Length: 505
Image 1 (tube, rainbow, N blue to C red):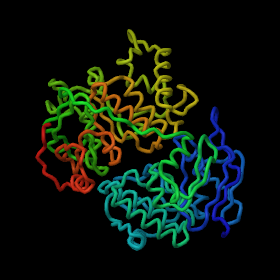
Image 2 (cartoon, one colour):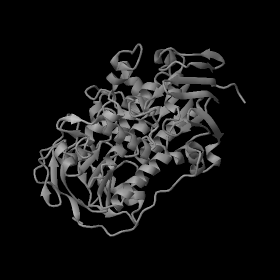
Image 3 (cartoon, helix red, strand yellow):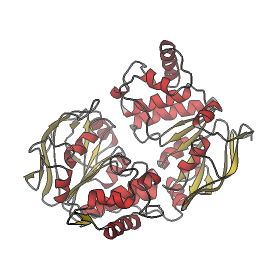
Image 4 (spheres, helix red, strand yellow):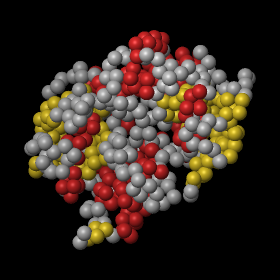
């Protein structure tokens, strides 16, 4: 065994009310692809932030190539050979690829020279990029390439990747994995965070499992099942969502010839979208990011009002109603972006519960909020959806992404909607939490609600949806029953190679 590239001994970080990392120790070898696994709130994000210089540990030590390592900033980490691709992109849509890459460099070369280097490096690693293209015109997969190439231009010895495949198609995932394997053979170590355990099994050489801030296990992912790893993460048997077969009831949500221009630059035009969702039914809508998912949710939630009679609830036109009026009619929604759209970062969980539930949960009377009742509702969400937090007074931004997602989805489901539209309901959520959210959506439909699930996780849609449709460049394919639908057929639908006649079934 060679000397570890990175060794961590006894790393500890404590925040008020929570021990994020508790005496964490593990090592990464040169060229190793090492998975870091754990439930939401297990301490993964805090740990990689300490490695990357965003957070200072309270105790413990690190060594990089045998030398003491304790970066005080990301700049110091990059100078030492550590790079990180974050789950959320940090790119400017109005700038081109080369300009965005330059912004992430300490001393960027002239644009022409940088453009040449971007082309060379991107083609070498199988991630071709045109440095002159505007980022706003790129797909989600291409935007991730920009982030990766920006890191590779630094010639890192350790590359940290946080949920890198959450916005990629299966084909793009395979291209990324080829790139990571090439980097591995060249000696670059990769610390890989993902909740997609089958991907971990196919890609990673080793795995360290965290639970409640502590290391609870290590394994070779290639020699254990995804279920076994998931159960190591949660410390108990994993529950599989169960569907209750039932005939759908009367139509609740009807969308007819919905056409809508985007509300922002680089958005997607919705083109003649039609579908119906019945009581007790889940319609799954798949597609690669950037094909109209956000615009469709805005049209259904009431954020985009210029849809006239194209959206109907039980036959009644609601296209001109805003989100508050639609919520009063039991049409609820949860957008993809958790922090800033679904939740106000600096508000407490109690305040965030009030934002969407004040009317439906009776949290206000005669212009005054009932804070005791509001706090009780927030506590009910926390308990029902296992949100890991010290309490309802904690600010939304203090939660891990997965725990905030559980809170947001729980907040909507517990209001007992008749129609619920959710975008990416389990994005960045661990296996146990994803299973719980999917079961809650199934239970909601079993109770008579109409549910629209917009997701890039095809396995998720095949597991819970009764019918499937695909968004491609703002058009929606005809919904088809998920039973018997093949991945080849789904791929064709997502690519736009389908009959554009939409069935009203």
